[in-house]
Amino acid sequence: MTSLLRRSLPAKKVTAAAANARRCGISSTVPPRAIYESVCDLVGRTPVVKIQKLAPPGVDLFAKLEYFNPMASVKDRLALAIIEDGEKKGLLKPGQTVVEATSGNTGIALAMVCAAKGYPFVSVMAETFSIERRKIMRGLGAKVVITPKEFKGLGMVQKAQELAEKHGWFQTLQFENEANYKYHSNTTGPEILSDFANMRLDYWVTGFGTGGTFTGAGKMIKEARPDTKIILSEPANAAMVSSGTPQPEEKGVSHPAWEPHPIQGWSPDFIPGNTKVGMDLKLYDEIVPVSGDEAIATSKKLAALEGIFTGISGGATAAAALKVCEMAEPGSAVLCMIPDTGERYLSTPLFADVGADMDDEETELSLSTPNFQLSPPTTE
Image (cartoon, rainbow, N blue to C red; front, side, top):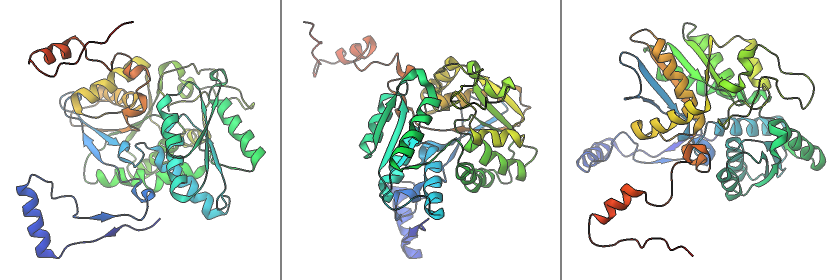
């Protein structure tokens, strides 16, 4: 990866600039200039923030905000990892088309990386996932192939495989490609360990989509801090891991414990290979199920009370973390992953009760002063 180029001012000038920044109300912790060679160099090194209002007294809850990645989700990591691994191994040829089955975030991440590196990209996506994800991918120059909802996640995976075989494309295979979780072992896990050096870290809470974060970061956390308990969360009505039933070996067969759920990006209708690696390593200490309603409600609370604007999966992970906080001993520190931004969910149930027009309270506020009134909508 191209190294970061930093241009520093001479010491005296930096001091003067910092003092001027303070006078102007500007943070002086940001370097005067940070220049990167590529948008890909912005992936990773995401911040951790303390939750101030939602956590119960006596327990410290933290959130790692993966929407600080350049395309606003944790999947930027796996996209960069798999593309660069394919380049290194000679599996991805210059100008070759890349194809992947995705619920949206991986497709958006791959569209970004492919645009930056000069590869055409085709996303295969089930029709149930949010419309804005399709538009973002197309805005990044990708093509989006939509599959019927009745074929679920496995259907879009098989469609991507068909396209790759038919056209000679490079299929990234995010659900089973080891480059996915290994990148998290090299970045996400060490970032967490660095941030919590000389601090308590009693619980780490994550869900799983491909299993890359769970397996990769979880492996590093367990090796370095074996006393840290890893909490894996999954949808209450699609509890595949906690069911104890293995993934059927037959191709195209959904897991028997899976049912449709609103937590987009979590728990496809099968247990991915990268998730199974973490399961086989016995990385998780406990499974905490979360319902779709809990996930949506917690996402809304994070936005309204903490200013953390995340999607349903982020709400789900935080909901699981809050359950952990309730049973944790005083003084415990809990860290949860926030996978993406709420902007990916505007057409989903997360925003079903949020209108575009002014509500009664907003109209009353507008009418409280005499001018610049919006004319009421006309009906024909």
